[in-house]
Amino acid sequence: MEELLYKIAITLIPNVGPVTTRNLVSYCGGVKAVFEARKRELLKVPGVGPLIADNIVNQDVLGRAEEEWRFIEDNSIQALFYLDDDYPGRLRHYPDSPAMLYYKGQADLNGERIVAIVGTRRPSVHGVHTCEELVEGLKRYGATIISGLAYGIDITAHRKCLSLDIPTVGVLGHGLRRIYPPQHRQVARAMLQSGGLLTEYPSHTLPDREHFPMRNRIIAGLCDALIVVETQKKGGSMISAHMANDYNKDVFAVPGRIKDGTSEGCNHLIKTHKAALIENADDVAYILRWEEPGTPRAIQKQLFVELTEAEKIVVDLLNQYEAIDIDQLTGRLKMANSEMASLLLELEFKGVVRALPGKRYVLA
Image 1 (cartoon, one colour):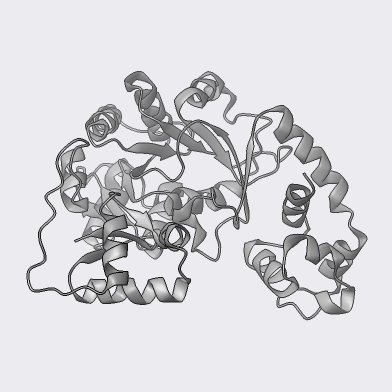
Image 2 (tube, one colour):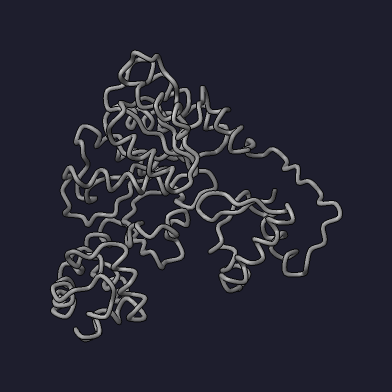
């Protein structure tokens, strides 16, 4: 409990974001050590001024952290700190990713295939049908679907997932004591059975407007691919698409008629080469080189390629997974990150391994 209490507390310090949190933990040598440090030591940490240092030394946040701890214990919520093994691997490498995530549900946040579906809050009938068809098609590829539980395309994707028994996760812009909009409470409860609800915000946090652009970076970072179904040229969906591009994720957009306002954003993404044009889920799978689960993997024998013993060990492990991130590789093989990075780079040069977004790797 004590370690978790300090992890929660460090995220409650006013004016301390993800980057400063990581700096504090790194400079002080641990989460608890941050609260044991003296003010003069804290002031040496980049991004920490007198006000933040006083907030840490006074330890006022520990009482609030204990209240938060009781809430997550009473409600079977997982608190995922960025140093924890079960923190989503796809998010771990981004400096602006949340230091803490609160998660309630059953879906695997480190699953092999995660697709985000976003779009306008006021979709056309065609947009709704397209979203449902995309979800139905993605079921064949064993994908988990994430979105923002908002009106329109978001809730359409979630509902269709529930009807098809597809794991679906809603990323929230508020704490887990409430559901916003309240009209989606029933859907949210149903999602907990095979999907889940995820947020970076403590339980009492209200759904304030500024929180939703921030939660979009979680949607963008947590997925392998982001699909925009319908959207105007400005709005949350476009923010998510641009963030996904910044994170080197695959972005897809469904084209629409040039005079339709809800297609303006999708057409713009395609026109400016910020998204690939798709018509159905098979287009996504083709570009990502996905095969349907259960399809035998045709692993090409690498003729005339000589591997070192260490490289053979890495290849053998990669052969057991469709995709795996570098942290999982180093953890399973007990190697230093630098050594693993060097091996993977050499295997890429030899054409044996291919890198995916989020520092994940597959056999070529």
